Picture 1 (cartoon, rainbow, N blue to C red):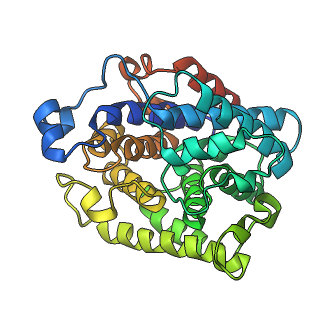
Picture 2: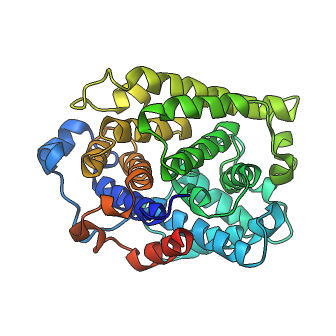
Amino acid sequence: MTTTKNAATGTMIGLALGDALGFPTEFRSVPGILADFGPWREMELPKPAIVTDDTQMTLALGRGLRTAMERGALGPERMERPVREEFVAWNRSPENNRAPGRTCVTACELLAAEGHAWQDASQIHSKGCGANMRVAPVALVPGLTDEERAGAAQLQSALTHGHPTALAASDLTAHAVRLLAQGADPTALVGLLRSYALDNRDVYHERWLGDLWLRSQDPTPAGFIRRGWDDCLDALDRLRAAVGSVSPETDPCLATGEGWIAEEAMTTGLLCFLLFPDQPLTALRRAACTAGDSDSIACLAGAFAGAHLGAGAWPAEWAERIEYREELLSLAALWDA
């Protein structure tokens, strides 16, 4: 990974800024947002810059990965326990008061029960965006093989969101962040992601997921995961059609979906970034002024922009007052180094 631009710092600060900018606008219509906040291109970061469960769970995942990798090479057994413990601790924290998703809360309550396989806690029918909005740390930690990165991205999803589309979207989101951090051209990104999805369409990471697929109605593990990749490929096709054809002045959700489900959060966050690949604040503002899951869309747009442009993407007057700033910077510095 390129380290001179401090891509991990750019990603972690960017996702938190997007999260905070979108927090007040979630569940709002675009006309309502414009009436209360003024022109979308002039939206300012709230004071104080409070984040949601999106950033909180990203930090939980980051802490879990750090603990796992301090103990040796990353594998499913080494990763599962500390990440599970961090998710449970987040769910029990008094700071978990930011309208967390029902799937995350339900799964974390089940994960807290000792002696049960994590697969029994996984919400197999949920493909909400709560897994891929937090996956960025998997893309940022150095030294992973392609198999380890894909497996880790899907496992962290599966702990709460077990639907194959949640797994595939988490994998794709991490891959997008990784590509951008490594210097991929944004104009080539959609094609690279489609190729990755096609290459992995029949790959079930049994070493990481175990028998999770048996909780579904699919006859084979390959058939299980294929459903998820096909959903994501359909979403990427909508994104490809939208890039270069939609007006930046219209709600991106009209082209790629409102982001409540995993594949739509990924592609609408990507659309906001790709509309303004070298204007990161404009990308965040566009993502926050949407009719859908605005904080998660903007969180993802911020991750993509920060991975692409690095730490210098974000003005100090914004970055210095984001909630959890010190922990975001501490984890990012570890990965940038």
